[in-house]
Image (cartoon, rainbow over all chains, first blue to last red; front, side):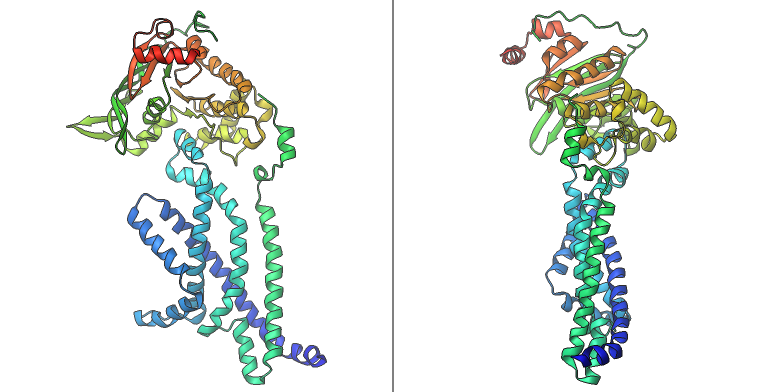
Length: 234
Length: 271
C-alpha cells in the first residue's frame, strides 16, 4: 500500500497524466465538432427537403445503433482503403464526433421542436426571413434548453474516449496499458487510471453545472414567486 | 353588449384616409389536403377602416388572414396589397411574388395572434423593437424611443424590462399589439385577439384596439366579440363554409340579416 503511494504514483502518474491531457484534447475537440454536426443535422432534418431529411435520419439511426468501439474500428481500418490516412488521434476525433453528433442532433431537434411554433409565425409576420427567425427567435431559446443535456453528453464522452485506446491513440487508458505491459502491475495501474478518470469527470460535472447556471438567462430564471409579484392583471 | 345597441362611430375618420382599398382579394382559395377551407373569397379592405370577419369556428376566417400575409400559401386567387400584386392566376396557374416581396408586404401588415406569440426570451421593449431594428433596419435609439411611445399608449411603459412570462394575458396581448403598431404598418391583422383571455382581461385589450381604430388605422379583425364588432366595425363580413355569405355595415348584419346561416349564427350568439 505504502509502495503504491510512495513509489508507483510518483513514478508512473506523470506518464498517465500526459495521456489524460490527450483524453481532454480528444474530448473537447470532439465535443465542439459534435455540437456543430448535431446542430446542422437537426436543422437539416427540419428543412423541407425529404431526401436530405431521409439521409440525415439514416445517419442518426446507423450511428446510434452500432457500438462506438465498432464504429471506431471500422473507421480506422476502412479509411485507408479510400486513400485517407488519418493519424489515430484525428480518426478518434472523427469517430467520437460523428457518434456524439448523432445523439446531439436528436437533442437539438427536440429542443427546436419544443419552441412554440407561434413564435415562428410572429417572427414571419413582422417580415423576418426564415433564417432570421431561426437565428434570432428559435435557436437562442432552443440552445439554452439543450445546454444541460449537452453537458451530460460531454461527461459521457470524457469516459467513452477511452475506447480510442483501441486505435492506438496514446490517451489515458492506453498509456496505462503501456505501463502495465512493462511492469505487470495491472491492478495498481488500472486503479490509478480509474482515479484520474474519476477526478476529471467529477470536476467536469461540477463545471457543467456552473456553465448551465451561467447560461440560464433571466427569462428562465424567473421563479414562481417573482411571477406572482410581477404579474398585475391588465 | 346587447345587440340592439346603436353603433355610432366613436370618432370621425381622419379626412383623406379612405382612398382606395389597401388590400384586394379575388377568388381566394385554400386547400389543406382534400379539405377546401376557402372556396373563393372576394374582399376589399378600405384604407382607414375597420373590417370585421365573423362566423362560426372552422368557417375560414383565420385562414383568410393567414393567406393574406402568406403564413399559409393560398391555393388559388389574386391578392393585391398596397398596389403590389402578391399572387395571381396566370393561364390557370397560381403564381406568387418572390419571397422577398412577400416578406416586405408582411412587415407592413403585422398580425396580432390569439395566443400572443411574444418572443419569450426577449423583454417587452425588445419584443417591440425587434421588427423595426432587425427587419426595417432602424437605428436602435430611434426604435427604442418609438417603442416606448407605443408602449406608453398601450399602458405598459412600466413593464419595458419585464419578460413575457411575468405578464398577464391581457398585458401580453397589449405588448403584441404594440409590437405590430411599432412596425408603422399599413394594415393590422387581428386573429381572435381576445379569445384566449380570461373574461376580466378582455376589456383592456378591446380598449386598446378601439383606440387604434379611432386613430384611423386600417385593420381586419377576426373576432367572436359581437358587441365589439357592432360598435367598432365599419363593415362586417360573415364567413361560413369558406365563402363570404353576407357583407354589410354592422347595423344590417346584426339587426337585419338576410342569409339564413347568418340569422342562425346571430341567434346562437345571443343565447
